[in-house]
Amino acid sequence: MDTSNVSELFISESLNNNSKKNCLCIIMPAYNEGMHIRENLLKASEIVSGFVHNYRLIVVNDGSSDDTLEEIISASKADSKISYISYKPNQGKGKAITNGVLYANADYIAFLDSDLELNPIMLKGFLKAMKEEQADIVIGSKLHKASKLEYPLVRRIMSIGYYLVLKLMFRLDIKDTQTGIKLFRASVVKSLTKDMITDGYAYDIEILAKANKAGCKIIEMPIELKFKRERKEKSRISLKTSLNVFKDTIKIKKALNNSVT
Image (tube, rainbow, N blue to C red; front, side):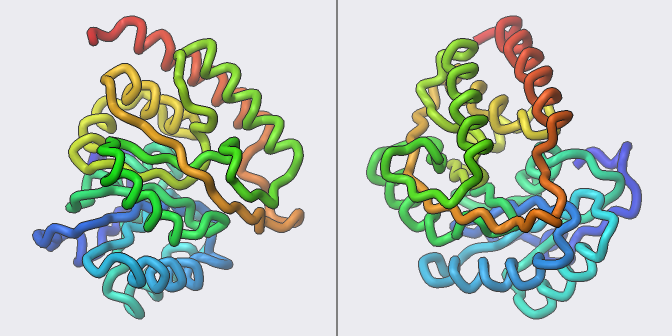
């Protein structure tokens, strides 16, 4: 982990002494989720324990300004399967995931949003599909015909817009890059997350575009999504964020065009 731009760095002892290899590590980035994070982590761990015995949740507190860190530490004390990384200032969801991947010691590594709008039970089906289809990456897709969504209309329109842009720019045969549940073979994701050029929400686009160019087998799975964030809670996806994603997407395209296959 590059510590040159971070302060107040905390890494749980269970990660610093993590010599035992897990079957599955789940990276869960968190930013100002103090209101729900403890409950969500304990619930996620309980769900995952129902289908994988040897697992670890790695929560990355990405420079939160509320009590997210304290709530994560509380959850880790209640459940030894929960580990954490914490630092300031905020560096973006993509950087949080990269930092989590560095500490993950497992055969499979998953990304999961910490708000639990996406139930981690879906990873059970993802693991099964990955093994049966010999895939390198399995991603959840809101645009899969079998997906069940309770989701704002504006977000659905944005998802379709992203799909059309990515189809034209990267020739990605993937309908949805942005859904916050993904599963990777560990060797694949550790290779892909080296030298990433984006830190924010375009991170998902970059990692899948790189995987596609490298010839990785990517399959999409249906999801069930229940939008939980209340109106009074600030949305993570603002107009400014959307514009930054677009700018980063252009940057990713240029970088891939200049890279050697």
